[in-house]
Length: 577
Image 1 (cartoon, rainbow, N blue to C red):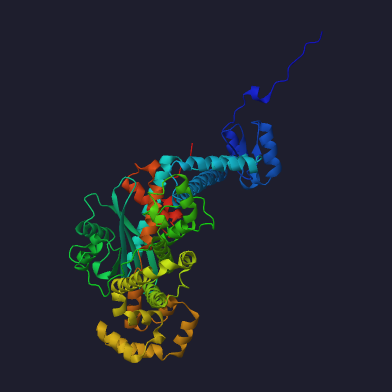
Image 2: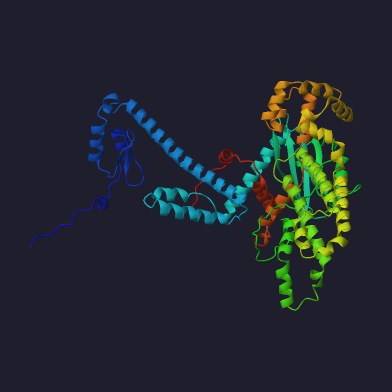
């Protein structure tokens, strides 16, 4: 019987790459059982001298003529080729690591914008890998590259710190060239009942570039007195190198700690900064306007931070009044809620519901980013005129502007007469309250009109403004502005800020416009940021440190785009393991 011989496999030959082949055939080992030609990048999968020689003689027959064997010229060429390959290899590795790091920063930025916890980074990475393996099962290199993205919870936390620092540094650079700045301040309790002070800044430079960002969040652990708030603000101004002489206004809510005549934070701060105007003190009744369906399944309670609309909450209550009464009767609790059958009480609630709806419409006009103080002035002036109309209508028993009252009157018309004088008193008091709250606006109404539409101001009115501000050249510059047909044409086709950019040659009136435009009209940004804070530092993350909370909040509320390329360059990029 013939003896069978097993064919020997290549792996069993234990072949190795010999160093002299580098100079002879211009091949180098890849370190993975293969070798590559330095001249054409062709890969040979077997370490056989015959294979390398065949490739070299066939593909590069002229090389030995140009670089003869045994001469120094050939050795120098080999050294240069090896050096170039090493550089290309390092470049590929660096680019891959840098891209992975940049992706890590961008994903972290998106997580923070959505106010998600650091631990969600690993979940996002798992989703990316799942998508790659599902959509491109044949392209294993995509999944391999995605695995290099660093998204552990600790890495996401460090990335968030870097991004927040980058945004703060960019803000600091912008503020260094700012001509005027205004501050919006508000304080509230976080999930741990620790008072937190939010400080937003609105700045404008000589080119009318406007910056509106979160300046800082300060923990008021020693109390919320006016002096504590003042000290926190001054420390923040010093931290960002903001000169007090640049401050044009402070905007805050009506809390005594903020607006006390002697010890309020605004009064104490005004002693340290000369202000042309005092900022409007207004806190929106409605921060987030929630749309409800026509039919409700349950009552929605008002919350202090998210500021659900009081008007909509009352409308919700009035819509469910009859079902509520039926439920109370079914529970045998009519004695406890007897006021629900009081016609005058129900009519008063209906009136409160309607008047609060009117207030909410005013609030909506005041909300949003990049609003200006002259827009607030216009909205308040129009609302004051509407109050006159409402008061005259009620005195004439005309309730066309009070739909909820009309609905109740259809069932309880006899209850209107005792309530009418009370309704008139409420409207009168409301008007007086607005007149008192916004009395600064009346004193400077012509200035606001000048900034919003300078062509509505007469020359004699401009003289009053010039005398009021002590700027003699203001009136002469105004005459030049108003007599320009080109500026009038530009005003009709551009917005207010862009128009004033064209008036830079009129230095005094242009500077006055920048002063007014720099003012915060409301504390809307603070209220919106507190809503974000309640999501970031929630019940499940109540141990989040002040530093991490501030960093996450800055990223969440900022409109600035981080410089990701700069962040990557500052890092020694490594892939995830």
